[in-house]
Image (cartoon, rainbow, N blue to C red):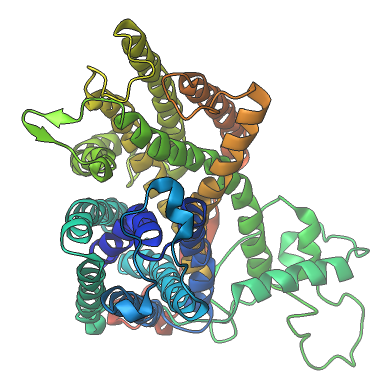
Length: 556
């Protein structure tokens, strides 16, 4: 499902600017802004999809429901692209300077476009939030063999996402360029429909979660009760704090023991200490929380620094994607006698990732597992850290390659020439390859980390957070360019890369990435993995495999 769905999404995420500009008569600025808002929304709204999955619907139902919403969005896009009545008249025979004279889309046409776009964004966000958790939920984390398979699942999930993106960037983009946008959107509609069929075929086999209430509401309760009890002294013995171990009364099938961090929040679990015999009924959740509920809140707080320290890497990814494509337009794009089209440039890092992922999963992880004894080979935070280091190296390499490219332009007196430089575009492959490795380590490490560390009642919300880091990184990228350009006096102010100082910009990003890694090291060293006491609760899964297991204690 992820491969097909991402094939449709990525193909549009990189090429919709052409559709907005050439078929909807948007200006270049409005086209770029519309695409940025669409992409950012698609990742940010994943939080809502995760909330729905954990609170109201099962993960499977969330995937199907949001997949159908995405399907509807692509269907409307297909109809609009096919019927000329739903689009403004095309601009023909006008110079670039005269495109402002084109007839703009009227309000009804724009409404259809934006409705379909945000149906797609809303749909893909729900799928991205719930689908990783649905897949990961098929593996028993208490079983060492299945725990290793869980890590492998996330690697293959990324591979499916990558292969889908490769097909989208090549085949779907080729269809939109040569056959028309109605055919391209139609192919995306078909892909999403088939993806829903595929995931539905396994319905009778899935272990699926049973929603147990809003995790956000539980977090609010902890803060409010802790504030109300702020004057109460903390008990010296942790066992005096309120906990519910009866599985019929408990919210989830796990107990989170108290960890000595954020002690202020422990006051939310302080029960009535006076001899109020009149209180015959137990206090409600807005007056007394369990230790597990408090620790669930602490987990979210501990995760925040980790989330924030990975945002800048995604900012670097955004810069690499945009400026590397611009660099490629000044370089020789021939492979033997074949000329690589500009939109195909993003295929390079995807191809590297598709090669690295099986090697990592089948060679590196088993070797590392034998050395460390950890089912995943290395711990989640270590994997994220390796990715952050590689992203800094990638930015440094990008700066060196750009310095080399500018040197070639000067040596051949082509600084102001529009002709491609006598330098192969595959010089960009070095920075792409290293960043592909970085993305493989960090992205999957974040998915694993947020899934494993989230409490049982907020797994989908946890995986949705990893997508939000990507969204924040992309939103931050525009601000970074503007700030650097203003402070530096115009490193990126020219329309000519040969006269710009893009190499300095890349090296600056490398330096900031190193500083970001130092901050991440401090956050990762401070982070404390959760300790879980698991109580069997067979109704938590729809599978017979969950029955009859003993009480176990897991320490990450």
